[in-house]
Amino acid sequence: MRNLVLVLGDQLDRKSVAFDGFDRAVDAVWMAEVREEATHAWSHKVRIALFLSAMRHFAAELRAENIQVIYRLMDDPANRGSFAAELRATIERLRPAKVIVVEPGEWRVAESLRPIAEFRPDRHFYCSTEEFGEWAHAKKQLRLEFFYRQLRARHKVLLERGEPVGGKWNFDVENRGSFGKAGPGFLPKPLTFASDAITSEVIAMVNTTFADHPGTLDNFDFPVTAADAQRALQDFVSNSLPFFGMYQDAMWTDEPVLYHSRLSALMNLKLLNPRDAVSAAEQAYHDGHAPIEAVEGYIRQILGWREYVRGIYWRFMPEYLERNHLDAHEPLPRFYWDGKTDMECMRQALGQTLRYGYAHHIQRLMVTGLFALLFGVEPKQVHLWYLAIYYDAVEWVESPNTLGLSQYADGGVMGSKPYIASGKYIQRMSNYCGHCRYDPAKSTGENACPFTTLYWEFLLRHETMLRANPRTLMQIRNADRLSSSEKSRIKTQAADLRRTLGAQTT
Ligand SMILES: Cc1cc2nc3c(=O)[nH]c(=O)nc-3n(C[C@H](O)[C@H](O)[C@H](O)COP(=O)(O)OP(=O)(O)OC[C@H]3O[C@@H](n4cnc5c(N)ncnc54)[C@H](O)[C@@H]3O)c2cc1C
Ligand code: SF4
Image (tube, rainbow, N blue to C red; front, side, top):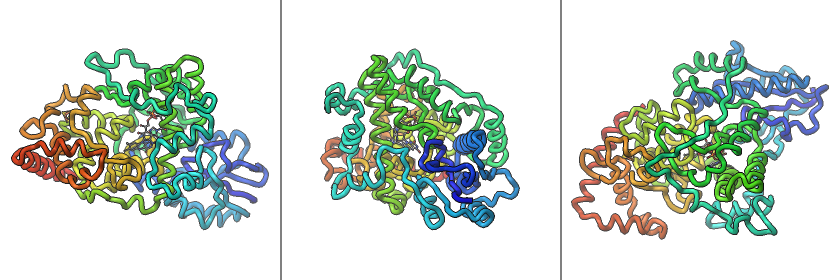
């Protein structure tokens, strides 16, 4: 054998650089389902099933092209349980001249494969890690906005004669609408994908082998092939994109998807190329189908945030995972794993997460993430929860979002301030509070909203740091207006919350 080409679970791209020069006569593909990858974080059943079903479909497509695929199934009794052991056994048996892999997305996997395999640069992304390094070099602050503008200019996205289409680079202020009392009204139903024989087999296996893992597979309806990923993209662009911009940050009871795309996992598995998503959105603008604030808002998430977090990950790993700037050490409350809480916003976000493996960005950032930040949960526990629980979780995108954006554990690499708010933010952006036993306006007393109590207590606890930051000075000035007895009641109430909820851990 000449080349053994490794295809990892998040590298399911037939056009990948791994296949450049591939010769069926002398090369083969190697893929393996290993228990270690599903248990390293206590993964949601949907996350496991999505990866495995997509991998099996990809292998079947390669075989249909007469490509030799050496594939180890999870439930094969001979499965050795780890990548390293499986790969070693294959190499000993086949003795290939070379082992080739696209640079892995995760630091841990890259370290384990570096001595064995030749890495090829990943052309899935717009920006290589080297280009990000050049941009970041000698910069004091690595702010998304400047990175994003540079990428848009370089790739000529939403540009007219060198100027941003619509006259502005960023329509963020138009992306913060809420639905008002009447609610969202008509909502498009995202395209769903029925399980075929391969997916059904995977679902049955996951239900047996990972029975004690969180979540359910009863609602599994995700695309698992590149062709279906294209259909899901077209469906999103036709039906939801026009409303995406305005209601990007809004939340509504029992409506997990609203106008979001549910395409992140497909891009992370590389079944969908981000350029396809960006150019479909851009085309929708030029066709007059979607307004600029929706199209720019969507493209900013992909060309901006997605590329930026990858750059941050590779620049600061491996020490990034250890960061704990706010010195937070509380345990993660148990309700994160079972959704049993009387906070309606958390019940909604966690309930849908357990049902579908999905929550949209603001639910992750400003509900589950915000609560963990205000409560003072140890960042590593928050990171492992996010890595386990979402259908799209892969470490290079999950960890900067969790540790940086959401928990401020990186001390300001990602964000210029901690994203903190009281229950009133959730009240403004959703209808959750109207169904809740707590009152978002109250910080103390029996029906005080835990978010509001913990928000004020966070300001008091981190006063020195927040006063020194011009972006949080206003919030501290509001805290200055509290009387000393109010401050002490808030501190007592927060301590009671920590005692009660902190005792309910896994
Ligand atoms: C604490 C936390 C953890 C997260 N963990 C993950 C994760 O493990 N995997 C993941 O893909 N995203 C993660 N995100 C980012 C974001 O929440 C998801 O990408 C998004 O909710 C996926 O749903 P969607 O495809 O419907 O997105 P849409 O709202 O339709 O957004 C469009 C696309 O933009 C990209 N995108 C949007 N926001 C971000 C972002 N902040 N960072 C990177 N890409 C972004 C995604 O590819 C997404 O499909 C996390 C965010 C937070 C706050
Ligand atoms: S009152 Fe507080 S806990 Fe209840 S839904 Fe609103 S923000 Fe969440």
